[in-house]
Length: 152
Image: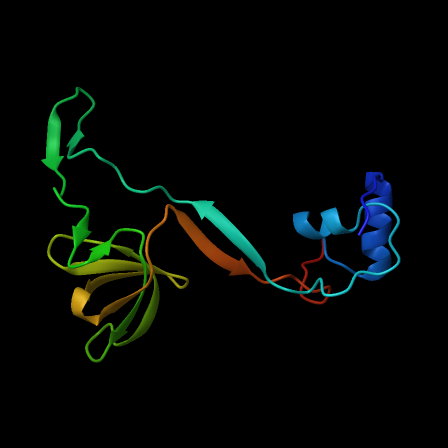
């Protein structure tokens, strides 16, 4: 593979000629002289910084006075906020399999941020760690095809 330069007009021409949707990663692949582009219709890994938590043990009001207290421990029942978990709840209102990012509570009943929304009050007994929190959130975003792309 060689490196080259090109104009924005050349990039757009290549993209339209080959029928490739406009995304940041695919635009970078369409720069310069291009005859064909193979294997472009694959999901892109999106990485988002989520942080590692805070050291602060109390919230303050606007005057600097304490307003409530936070947990003294970062880990609860072996889980930490930001861990990616799968929860298999056998029965009840929240029955089913939930996959997402956990927010721990001192009570042992956690909140799960899933792709479909927030699920509250999942017991730690139903959770299993898939990935420990490392300060980032990971998600695969599917590449839009020409047929699925909105017009306008």
